Length: 389
Image (cartoon, rainbow, N blue to C red; front, side, top):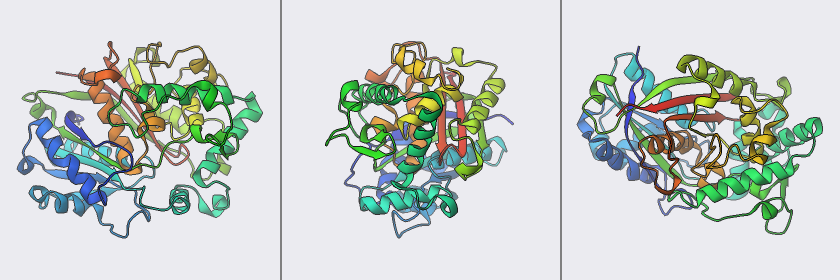
């Protein structure tokens, strides 16, 4: 089996959208993605939809909503995927398996979420559905509370890393200034991010507001085609590797100071692609909270356990560093509409590889790494991408 190629994409601005629901959000990207790829709706063999929902909307059966928002796609087989914050990557893998198996030649992947219409207290409880409620339902601060525990345990073992977390937040907000799709295009310096204040209060454990990603609306889409179809396309990006690993859902069954599943996903991806972390041009990684990005530096092999702070403190992950991480601004600046996130991260990587990233562009972008996770590093997806044409 040979994995399909990415040949087109589309992306809405992330933030507080006027679109009333995921049906409308998905309609904003399906047509433009097909146009970008140069593919007609009648050529699509399957639609793969990533929407978390879990209470953000009374309307479910989200796979069928693509056809309601775009009549030309209403009779194409469509399936909805859900895998917590990795929902978009799960849909992407479903589409890739579909084409690699020979069941179809062209697939449309759509990820979306409408979150901002839901009251904040309800959002917290909905997101806590991505935890093991039997043990973790009482965690203060909702899902942020889980990552507050992770940060607290890391600090207890390796020392206070609050300043390094602030540096990660400041880096990603600075990068996000150049992303036209970003939810929050504001430059916060390290001093602001590292100071607890009325504008930057503690949220959970040692995590401050600037350590937490944004509740956002948005959608993104990708067009995938079999390699023989890609030969006639204007753009073509192939997967050198794509992996998916899992860890136990309950934090009590893991060492929460290490993302072991993420490390396995990266190690398997490097082995499949025949590369190491030093070969990557940049990485788009899942910074739902700044401590997640810190731990992911260690999982991807950029630093040893307990030493992730070096990567940000010594400038390794800056846009002009040896391995730029989240040149898009990441979830921290770009926003985190759950179902759209994994798809968006692959769109951002594809834009870089095609030299279409505008002010976000990494001049030497040749090999991209993408890491998207569901829950607290429970479902872990890593991709290594390169441009073909």
